[in-house]
Length: 289
Image (cartoon, rainbow, N blue to C red; front, side, top):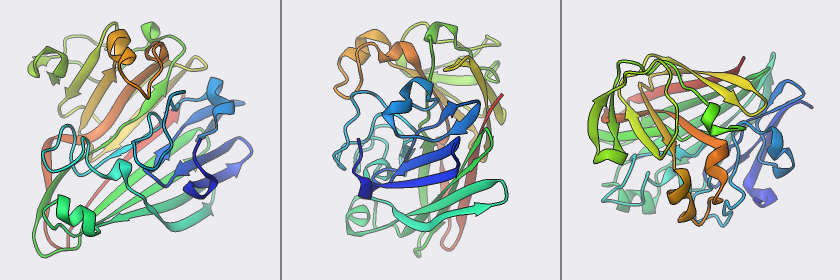
């Protein structure tokens, strides 16, 4: 588990609370007594909606497997730096401490350029604000990317959401029919989704382009369904490593593929450009129904 100094806790009440890892803004999202929780506590693993792998590494170097890592400023293999960019392996600052606002509690975190990021990413000057909001049976995540430099820059970003399931064979995802998708399992060729409900029955790694702004994921842990509503995050990635790939991942249990699905909101099909002094704002809301 993460060290105490690496974690910020949000607590709305005894049933709605979370811990966020400052190393990479790791959030885990769960259900306890019919309420929403964001937890990184393995004692609630059996009730979690956004689990951590039992093999997750907490060394402030490697990305933590599970929860919701933030992909920025690049999705996928990156010739300038680590896969999926540096945000998920960077130390974030607590910009605004946990604050109650009506029926919610929120905190804001900040990642800004430093010597290492400037050397890696073409001297770009930036700030990324990440706000986590917990309400009753709801989690909202807000991204605010600001260009603090004199030149435009381009980036891609993704909320790499891990959902826990009781049985991957029963999980369905709606809102993807008729969309074009890039299938990374089949040489990154493009296809059109023909199914009303997408399932994972084998290794799945797909990027759906320009999805509608809502997707429902069914049969998560606790036999609950979840609605993911996206703003300014037009793309959806669906991923499950399945048996063979799970066995070669050192930070992922051999059998854990049976109890998880990644359904990820992002801006990744093409880069987003931000002019000097401008900003990019986006959000994803998760509602248990």
